[in-house]
Amino acid sequence: MFGYLKRGESLIFWLFLLFGALSVEGALSPFLGFLTPDLAVVVIIASMCCLEEVKGLLFAFLGGILLDLRWQSIVGLSSFYLVCASYILSFFPKKARFKFGFKMVLLGIGALVFFQLFKFGVYRLLGIEYDVSFIVLIGRVLLDALIFCFVLVLMRVGGLRKLEV
Amino acid sequence: MERVFKGWFLVGVLLFSSLFLASLSLRGWSGIDFLKNHYISLALPVEKVISFPLFKVRDFFSFLYFRADLLSENEELKREVALLRYQLSLLRSNLNGDISPREGFIPCKVVYRFPDRWFGEMVVDKGMEDGVAVGMAVLGERGLIGEVIEVGAKISRVKLITSYGSVVGALVVRSRSFGVLRGTGTPYCELLYIPEEGDVSTGDEIVTAGMGEKIPAGIPIGEVVNVSKRGDVLEIKVKPVEDFSKLRYVWILKEG
Image (tube, one colour):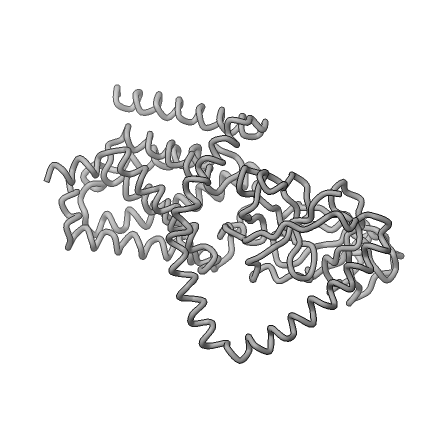
């Protein structure tokens, strides 16, 4: 049990997971186009459910840098919005963040929508191009939400359940 | 109270670090490029391994489904290549050395498209080691698709002509009117600065004007699809010759 717990609380584990998610996203983008899900954000939100506040913030910062190195021309931008969003998300009660249930599904979906809106707002403020079409929202929000729910179901029925703190 | 203060302090430090990194990145600090290149070099093989079976499965089913079409398309493409080679030789002789016979193309594969900036940017698999430089023109099968804006050791970032705010000097072939083609972030572009009395009509062919340093004149860009008046100038909507949703292989035009 402690093995699972330690892995779930380790920053390196989440960074590896994020690297994997970014690689899968990169490999899928030529096939799915606009519908490519934002897997990195799913990983970041999932991490927030398992990591404590300080580690969560550090992961948001490092994860943002990884995201920028992979997708953006300006490094530091994703870190900025992810740190802000993570801090706001950390105000949710710990119980709500750690307990895998209906509330957490709602919290995750809300966080996904919030992240995309926050990202859009920061990009808009800085005058950076960001495509907000219906199909992008389907890929980046609805598909993400589905994947997030799927991960939660896996956690509930499979071995990952032991991640619960 | 102490927890909130600690949280604020950490958030402050992280936000400041993010902004500091962003400012370094905007100033073009070489350390950022170094990190990017190494990250991409690390990620690219992993992505190739993941995408390899996906490509194979897609190619297999495409082959089964489109076999007859592919054979006839192949014949058609052979004819088109012959025609294009002829047109290229004509261009070379007409442009007084803008595209000299010494110059060549660097064939590239599109490795990334940005889902939230589909008409903005893309990444190709050739970089500094292959002779790519910032500002070089990038061509698709039918015409100009963009310009190299960032070069790594093995990859390059390309800004598409449809990207919001992207500008290219353009020429209306029929009337020889000069203008500036601007991207709109959609599949269409706008041709700007053509006066009200300018001779432009629907169906006119638009090519590069060759006013930049590295993009030669005469490369097809698109076709005028709509012309209307806005104040003292014309509002011209241009449809690029290239289908940006199907880009898989592109060519970077080497410098002269």
